[in-house]
Image (tube, rainbow, N blue to C red; front, top):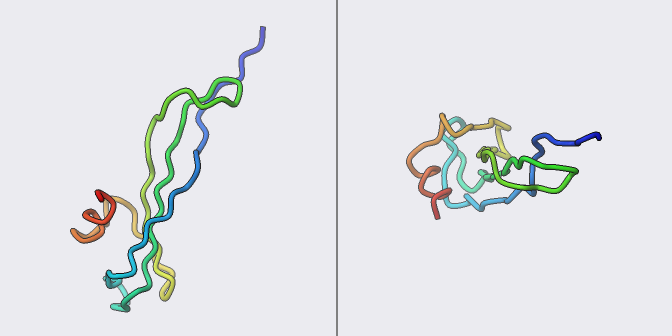
Length: 80
């Protein structure tokens, strides 16, 4: 019997961070947040969530901030 299992990303959720300023280029209204859950799956059916990846992208300078680099305001926006 063959079992197909592994970890796959789920649907990405976009978070509006338009009220925040980019720490790198100091531009207002250029940040977009993304939250992507990773699921353990069995036969391509998601069973349970393993982890979640958070990232913030600046549309002006194209800098990407990961969870370890978040400012206090970015962390508060993801907790809402």
